Length: 304
Image (cartoon, rainbow, N blue to C red; front, side):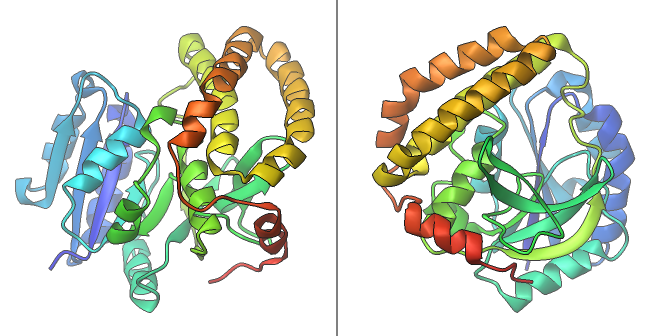
């Protein structure tokens, strides 16, 4: 029986995957693991990389040249999963020997809980998502005492039943913030995330690189998605409390984006977020993250 499905979304990933996938294959040897690849850029040649590394029976390959985004691709992949748990894993993460053994052990210890798997990138170690007063959500430092709010999409374990019950990732967000949206919803509903401090090597940002168009698109999405995440997941009182902070935060972020030459897409994202916020709020009818929830989160300690 397959216990764990590793779901990976690909986009301009062939060179990176050629480096990381062999480590995944070694780490999975002899374990009840299957791979699912959702390829949003199938002309890139990732299919050949996968076929060269894995037997056909060991994986599913789901190409979609329309590029529906990270969130939609994850949901599509999880739809075909038959395992009890799924590991969302970015293609620019290496799996050292023994890492999947530890992930499976953590699943067996607490099969109902999501797991934030630790990553090491840019000289720091991270595990999951943290609340932030300016950006609303941020990569959580592994050494933080509190949290996590939920797993980061770069290395996240979910019970498949839980993922589906919460409608997975909000596909409209496309990318950058979709994992935070799910994390806020899970936490508001009382679901707590465990931490597995593995410090998996993570390159970070391989699909964007220095491409000006993609950097602008990311700035647009981050600006829009912050507002949509707040609109969807915050309670009414917390929204009232947060609006002045969000406004000041976006002024600070605007200055940063101006220095980066990304002010125009950032402002377009803010405008789009304001327009789409009412509809986004109506699209989630579950528990919302409120002032008491926030206070409780700030007092919580990491569960390992």
